[in-house]
Length: 512
Image (tube, rainbow, N blue to C red):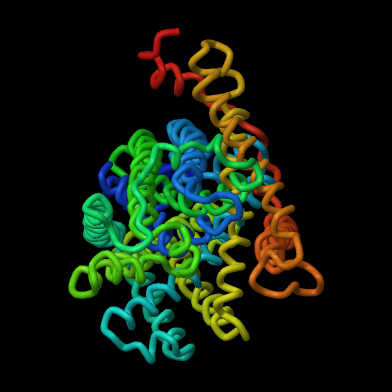
């Protein structure tokens, strides 16, 4: 008698939304790579070149630009603490998207994921533009550096190149970032030392010796201080990219979060040194006159031209190009996470079988960035619209940074009052970061709403930064509604709280 075959039990479906289950290359990079990616993403040389002059130009600020950078660092540090503890509990490549979904619901999670993508796409135009212009200036092709068609072609080439690097693998991306960041920081250090030595040896015209009062925020009016902080937040933005590659890190729960906090500390030291040296060497008026790009004319002043000036131009170029690459990285990982959670079409979840990178998400980010960049550069006044786009993206940054801080306090709410250090480090500090970001968001809206404040004329009566930033966030609500109709399962997810073991394991060494 022939025995009947017994059907094998069905295997439990793999949860592709779980950390480490998205097909990305686990353990590919170490802690130092997390730190390098975090710092490189902020593009220190590019950020200083394009922002420090605007800070110095704020009425009533005088010589207190270093104080503004110091104060701007505080809410950033608080939010980095939120990243640290949320990543301990949930090392998901979607970062804020995943965390706000768990703590505050799928609707809030989706719109925060959109905010990350929105900010990254908006900034790509400015990054690619700077990389293109500085490439031409570095080789002495001055006619190309002022030609819109040449700048557009150069921008497209840079975006394509950095998209290809991100597509080829996280290890290649990390190695290139280490080289570019090392070069950038070395050149900025040389510039700062030479500038300060020049000042103390007698200096050039309008040079002034640094004073402790430059770092005192209480010597500035609240209006001037807040106006400076709006720009200061942008200078620090980007360090969270080091957390977005958590699922590809050797210690996904611990390393990326620690790197996030340390990166903000290193950034404030870099910014204070370079800002102090620049202001001491040239004075505030020089910074204001050259606010669109302070490092190029400062290079001529400090180095007198020659090789070192070329190196300074090269540092801005490497900074912008490195940030172009590390802007693509977190966006692709946000969208691959959203797709694996069922919040975006499954196509965005595809991973390259050989390189183990988000294939569709990476290429999509590169393609959208090219369309956005070409559109802005073809506008009637690209310099003006690029300036307003930087202001506008600040709303998206403040939005998702702020809600990350709030999500941390909510996600760990059942654990906060078990000890004072939990209440302080995991609850109060992240919540204070949320409060700071919310306050700056509101003040930003009031500031940029004023007629004549922005570079470009209003669009249908609305100031351009508001159209780009807040309009972009509102557009996300439209896309979310569409996803809700076609992919409703994600929006049925329930709220969650953190596993109590997380804080017990990682804060047990702190004495209550």
